[in-house]
Amino acid sequence: MLDARLVDPLDALHLPREGGVFRVGLVVPQSGPLGLTGPSALDGALLAAHEINARGGIHDRPLELVLVDGGGAPHPVAAEVRRLLDAGALDALAGCHTSDVHRAVETVAAGRIAYIYTPPHEGGTRRPGVLCTGADPSAQLAHAVGDLTERHHLRRWALIGNDYIWPRSVHRAAATLAERAGARIVLERRIPFGTVEPDVEALLDALRAARADGVLLSLIGRDLVHFNRALRRSGLDRRLVRLSGSLEENGLLALGGDDTGTLYAAMPSFATLAEESRQSLGERHRALCGPWAPVLDAYAVGLYEGLQLLAALAERHALEPHGLTRAAGRLLHGGRRTVHLARAEGLGFAVLPPLGPR
Image (cartoon, rainbow, N blue to C red; front, side):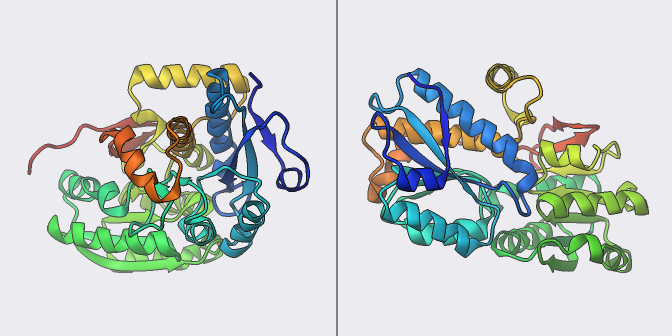
């Protein structure tokens, strides 16, 4: 069976398929706000495709990945996906990108093809054929906000995020959870992509004026890195408890690690896998991609698992859009991974045990 192949969208549009391949459109950011996570996510997808092909592919059809850069603005990304669908160039879709891109892609894919979206998402209903395997804000933050409020005796939370659909949903969920834990929201800011670095001093001044003791960060990618670097320069990182719903291994490396003991992530990160699974996945990744490959992160693991799920559904002839959610539910059997609270320790994460009943 062939090794996994990456196919350019233009080739997928204009060249005939060889050997009746099964083509999955892979919408992964290679640029834009989440561009720093792209190489790792791509490796996770390639590893899954390689393993699927080693098992015989999908109904004896080799799996190929058609790479669409999901880092652009929502409508151009969706337009490229539409062109591929209109040409009959794809058999399924999988993606790891921002929620605004996801909603745009959903409008062109729904009812036409199975589309598996793997990162944390904004919640709400989905159209036929669209399956979200990540956590919505309420599930992602269900224990984290209350846990940190109690651990650190927090009373004044600030909410700082990018200005699009996912942070808005995160902030609504966080406000409810903070109030339930006996704290209150004293500041909320949402910032357009790419503007954190030039405007960061105003954000820091607002945090000081609000006398926040905890900050929920729904910034993503580069903006999250720039903000945490600025907190370090200001010294606020030592007194502010920070919780992020998007911080993963590559982002932690990009900001140079953290040793304050006050930076936390509520992501199903690579560190939250069982030790045996983590070691095995890491070894298989290095064997395929080499010792200098990007570190696997939460986005990579989610996409790896999403493609394995897609292959399992295809083997059961269960990719029909209107029955996708029910078929996936039977396969998952409640097996979605729990979102654990993890603390940054140097360049890695340590998973924290829950505090238990309050």
